[in-house]
Length: 155
Image (tube, rainbow, N blue to C red; front, top):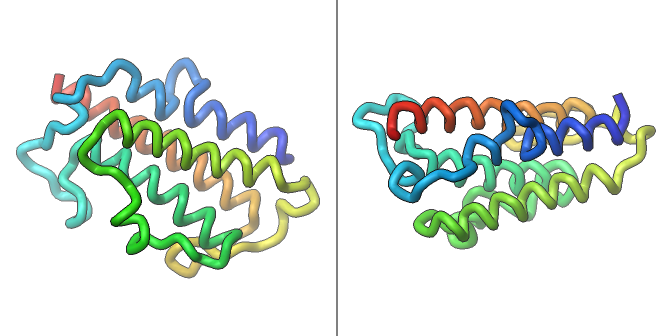
């Protein structure tokens, strides 16, 4: 695995896969479905099970993870509370794209030789840079599936 491969998979997981990308799962979504809250939700206490909360989470996670691994952790969930939108779907989608651009730009700045180096992740874990970016790629796919499921029961 090299940087070029990771870039390819990042682009597919975020937007370019014809089957399972995060943006593909969000394509054409109405505001009604975006903000819909399921009648029962037993996930994390800070989330309500809406697609809005998933988009907020994915956007924030990209920013917090990149900051933790490469910027000394200057961006935290606490700092994002005042920076990330949570009420305007259009703005949230723009912020998601911007957060993904930050991930892609960081990946483009790396060399293949840096991939085995270890970085810290949010929560104090350490992993290689390659594992770190694979985790972010898989995160998009995981949440794309959640979004598709919620859309199926909400629409």
